[in-house]
Image 1 (tube, rainbow, N blue to C red):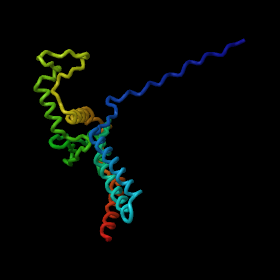
Image 2: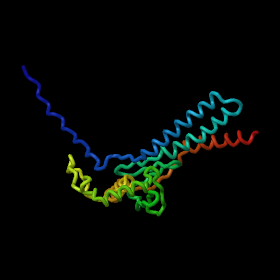
Image 3: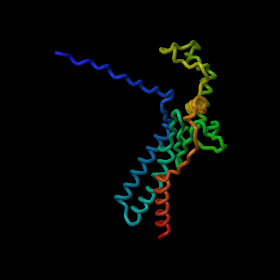
Image 4: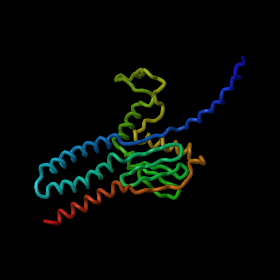
Length: 225
């Protein structure tokens, strides 16, 4: 009786190398919270007018909702920045801008955060707003010496349960920290062959179309006495 020969095990395929930078998404928590609150108020008032209103009131409520809901969502819930190894995608209220890292020239942070491409075209980053209050708070922390550890009321260093995680650099506002991370991505990936290409800009018709329809309907209703 013969025994079958053992087949050699199939060679294992090596796992693809993990990307150096995982996909990151940056959004404004305060903008999302404010937008959700405004949408809830608009829905409450609008639905009440649609159900209990008389005459032209339901139509006026419908037109107002068609106009306001897309605009509120566009300026609060919609803005986001997606960044990976090849490119960054900026989702602003009315446009979506895709910039490969090789097409990014620099970032500017003043009263708003902006990105400039190689041609000098400027795009505003709505998802990362500038907060002067946060900058002032970060400056006060740095002036108190919080870059090397928080201090107690008597001036003694406060013991941290995780001493290895204590920041040693300058204290930065959250928005400025995000812009610093994006600058690091440009420096690390800007010359990579896979991060080259042209800038693409797409209009957000899913926002513009219903808002325009609501504005036209509202104008017609108000003009017809």
